[in-house]
Length: 322
Image (cartoon, rainbow, N blue to C red):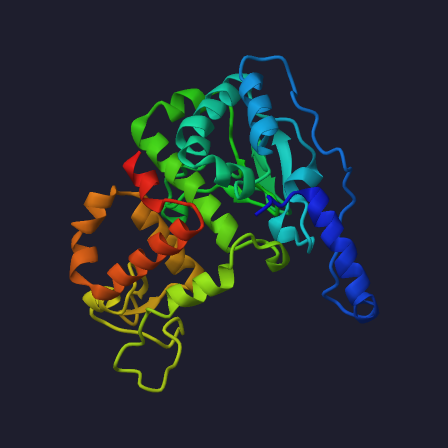
């Protein structure tokens, strides 16, 4: 399978334009393609010691780590939604870049076989300084923000890239803290899986993501108190006993303190919880985890994800093992 890059996307876009030309004239959901140069990257971008590694990744795997890039590189997508757009207010710092390149090598890129590096890893990894979401005044802080609102961490996922924000002067000292580094490792590897399963446009899906998601979600159950509900992920599927969360096949649920009821996460959130669950432990730890051994649906969902990704060359256990 060949890695999707912007040149491929542009070729696809011409096909979409020809195929849907008559339809799109009066359609509000028209595909919008930004102009991109066929010569996309000028690598190396500098003459630092870390540029040698960046050049090797680009040459060997078409993985282009950029610390100088344009807004279109960051925001380019089929449907130009402002919800996906960011503005750059500070570029990455040299010492931060050096530490980020080392981190990418040890805790992300080297965890996957060459076949995956060449085909499925994003064609761009952007190292950013300070980013602000479009039309918002709050900066996008680093992956390890410790508030409950982003307890899983933030790494930006784009059409053909993942982006590390806040690669600043303090990045090297932060990444040297074991708890910080572990959480950063989880965040970028989890974002890569989401990059594959939840592409910003389904036309460029690298895996049969819809089938994977649907099969994964089919293991979940509706609570027995709701015989008329068909979807386990309906907001009407609620329960009061916290253990029922696990019995129904969920690792977590939304809790309403007013009604004192639990409701399921969305399909995407549920799958992300499972990826994180698998990534945070070794194979032996997972197989002796009480949630895995005691609740059959949790075991089935874990086993399915591990098996289906193994069929596509990705060992989910390996992230936790390392």
